[in-house]
Image (cartoon, rainbow over all chains, first blue to last red; front, side, top):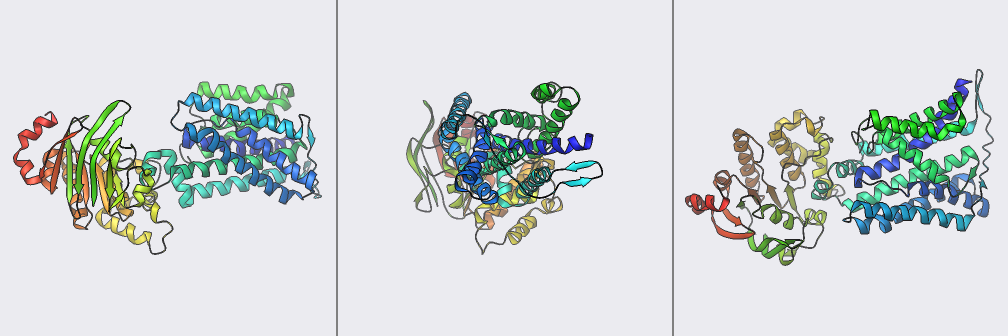
Length: 289
Length: 236
């Protein structure tokens, strides 16, 4: 029973982790929280659903298109809500981004309706049976996709020239400019990667729950934000660990205490982390800014 | 090579530079001396495009560069060694040097290994610790890394902001020797300093900045003879 549930928890945790990465990467570079990030997650799922249900495009292609559109949207958010306010007081930027978040939520509601939409995916692959534990293929798919995405990101940040430039920019953007690094370009790249990850997470979320709605980004976004803080904001590996940890804590709490308090466990954990370990599990912006 | 012409720079209503003009020619070491709040750092920031002059212009190799973003100015061939080093603490020494060569990352005739080998010839201590994070280096070693990082860009000119700051007298001597060595590689150097005697001992020419104005400009030799006058300007 425990291991059966465990597969649910870590696949949920992996989705939080994917979403948390976007918060933490953007924070690492511009030291601001992207409150519209949950909406990118939602739009990634909706675009994909839209291509599948309206144009009858198969999931892999629809997902790819959905991810591309959500990434474009993330880049547009940076252009519209952040860049003009680069030198403005931080509070102004927070208001601007909250505005974008509300705008996107309502646009989705107008375009696709406020009700739940069915996101039906049938992989046609039998579950994996390990003794008494039955793991549906979709859980393996969710966890596997997340691990591949996160591992690719880790390699990108660690090994490639642009990845290193990103870390340099997070550490000291002015010094990075002095190396000839176009910091604006790095910021766009950061939003693009974060948004693509969020879109993948949104699609995985839809695959998991078979339903999507315009408000799905709010709750998931808040949880992922909590996961990013839990792991140490600005730290990519912290976001990965924080997401998985949050998924498990939420799962254990709702399985063994009460599922009514599902959200309370997640945010309770955040409060505990802020009291006892305010810099997060791995520390702020330590290794993988 | 570098010409600063009648530059006035403001921070809001405060005038930090007032009609400043100076030049750096090929194969020269030029130093800019000044006390606190004299406008030294503002001059540096103006050259680098980190602040925009309110009037006047900055010309590099016959091209106006004021108004360009910092990264574009660096691409033109001006490599900075910033104040207090600003090495990337959590990047390794190799990664820091790679960042120095960022502008060449797409050019096929740039061989990063060769350039790095040249830097290691100059600073063998960096080679020994190439895989360590820059934060593990001492202040003097970080200064060498910052200079090595600037050299990685194959610059047409290097500008340095207070390279002696926070270093022991022995290390200051070493750093200035290195500056001379870099100069013999044919790279002109513009150095902003508070340590006037050290700076003037290696420089060809010097400018004295006081209250945002150039109050003296002469050869380093003549300036050294007027040390007391300069000290008065520097507020020592």
